[in-house]
Length: 226
Image 1 (cartoon, one colour):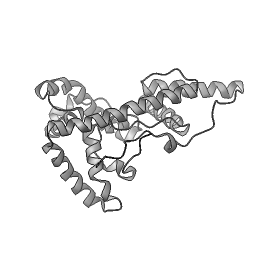
Image 2 (cartoon, rainbow, N blue to C red):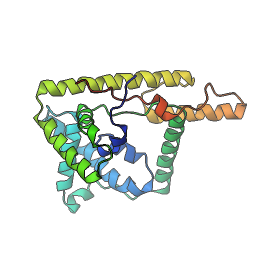
Image 3 (cartoon, rainbow, N blue to C red):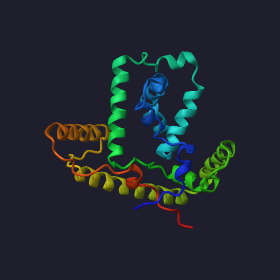
């Protein structure tokens, strides 16, 4: 089991999962996130080909920088229409099923980025500090990451892979425990789990397990070795 070094600082760290989380949220963020999401879909391969040595997190950061340089006129081509009631409902349902699965012990998806793991290690001593200081330390950590050698970055990529492997094993075990056919597609997996539980309620079948707290099953990064 992996132990998270700084769980309270998780939200202070830039995470490439931010986009996917936002797309699961309700209407206030859909329009803005859809514009950036469309930009990423359209330009990702082009940026990746121009910067083949960059990791996924670094590519997303670079795309964010390019997106911020666009004029309003340039952004129009990537802007989708305002979210419809049906789109809002579907995103709300996705979020509902995801929260329901987490309530029943589904492990939360951690970051699989070596850069994020490095930054979290650097922020460990910032617990309880003002957000201004945390942000300043975060920026310093990003610059420190840029200066790491390829070998040093590879070590963190290995840590990230270990986190991913542990998460996938726990996710498979959770699905098996709840008699749900496994898939790596979380939207489909949570949908299957939700439907399975609804069927159990209708038939009066006792669920395979009682509700587990999400924190008790969350796969997390192991403590950095010093």
